[in-house]
Amino acid sequence: DYEPNRSIQPGQKPSISETSPRDLSLLPAFATDALSIQPLSPSSFLLHAQQLDGFPDVSAYTASDIFAGSTVLFVPAASALSAYDIKYELSAHITVEQVQDKLYEIDFRSDPVQRRKRNLMWKQFFLVLKLLMEYQKGTDSPWFPYLASLPRYFSNGPSMTPFCYNCIPSYLTELCQKERATMNQLLMLKSLSANLPHEWLGDETRGNADLWKWAYQIVLTRAVTSASPSTDGDERDVDVDVDDGDENEHGDLRLLPLADMINHSHEPNVEILHDEYGNAYVQAIRDIPANTPLCR
Image (tube, rainbow, N blue to C red; front, side, top):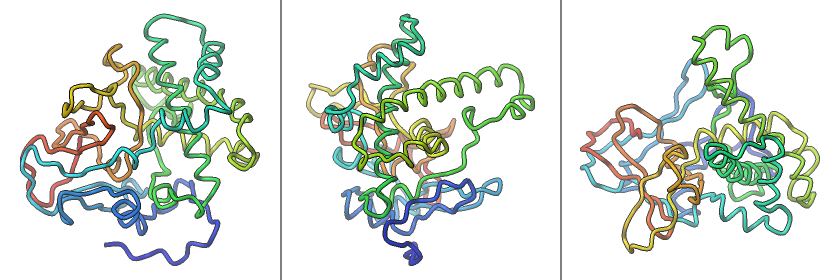
């Protein structure tokens, strides 16, 4: 349970300062009431806030025993932020073709790896735009409780400085620099955001470089890729990586509120599945004892 944050003022925007606490006070009620996200039981999916290396961190855990095959959390399709949905929402102002053309100007290589990369990046770009648009609304956004709960501190490749690169092995440096280069390429798409109405994305928001980087980091670290819609009725598809091949090239990229609080691990105990309608299911892949962190 979380006490309501009574210091929130009308029109207030979430802080993206690295040291700002993540506000979880509004998230549980928002997820279950406004988004109809359903846990297996009130004690099967709980959030735990703590300090990790001096920065606020949030993780999910279960306070009750969960059997393998159980659906720990159900996220309806309408409760997800979907790149495909945003594409249609913004289609009168920005098209996928415009984004793809701009990406081709940035890197004109046309091999399969670059094609898949561009196909991922247009989806990331639309999700970034949606986060910025909702951020600009502050408390007037229906997504404010979700935005306020998201992390501000990141310790991955795009967040590193040249000094950081000197402190890690050379191969890891190369990987981190590639991640940062990809972020810089996506940020070069900012000029397309000028096509949006000012009331959707104003100059102050559009010109805030730190805000763009924060939104990109949210998408990079939390969005899941779902396979193309199935025509096989009840068949469910596991969320997959963009590097898994061409079969996912036309799949969606989505942010799943509450489910994205589940940390990654080399020993996962849950997986995220999607049905043909876009609903997401966090499903236990083995028996999970009570008071165990949920990880995928």
